[in-house]
Image (cartoon, rainbow, N blue to C red):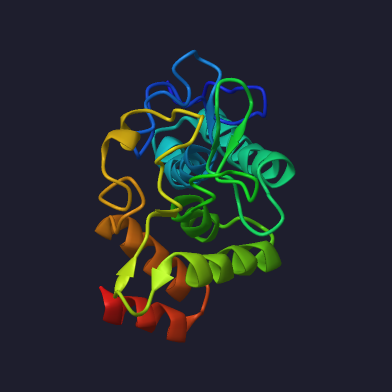
Amino acid sequence: RAMQWGGHGLPKMGGGDWNDGYNLVGAKGQGESVWLAMFLAMVLERFAPVCEGRGEADRADRYRREAKRLKKAVDETAWDGEWYLRAFYDDGTPMGSRQSDECRLDSLSQSFAVLCGMPDKERRNRALDACMRLLVDEQGRYIRLFYPPFDQSVKNPGYVKAYPAGLRENGGQYTHGACWLTMAMLREGRVEDGYRLLEIL
């Protein structure tokens, strides 16, 4: 069900992914989720040994091949120069780009770049640097899900815009998303940054 690819070779967004407030990003059937590509690659790699244990070696091989292909597709189509994009709208417009007026940087793609083992260490760390710079508010003691929140954007990602700017899924601290960023810092060996985020949480 999840292995349905769009024009960039990434999983289709459908009616939303982890952030179900993004329910209009792929409503016409063409939008793609960069985060889901990373998450799916991780799941496929971890599920392949389960398939082997059930005597399904061909399925295990397919899952490993697709996981590798997904990571390659993400690196080729979703690296924005400083961080990873979050998604592509139905019309191909990127979400989570330096050129985006809202949701310029979304933490999920940066966290899962580490958690799924994207191959480029320099890119992973540049993405984490951007999160520390743009998403972590040391004075306010919170960790944004993305920034800036949706408010006046011409693009309509879905009902996420119904939340007031900076609350919940609309660019506020969504705590288990913040935990994923903390896990990514620690997994990458950035212990001091990870500890700072734990202190904030």
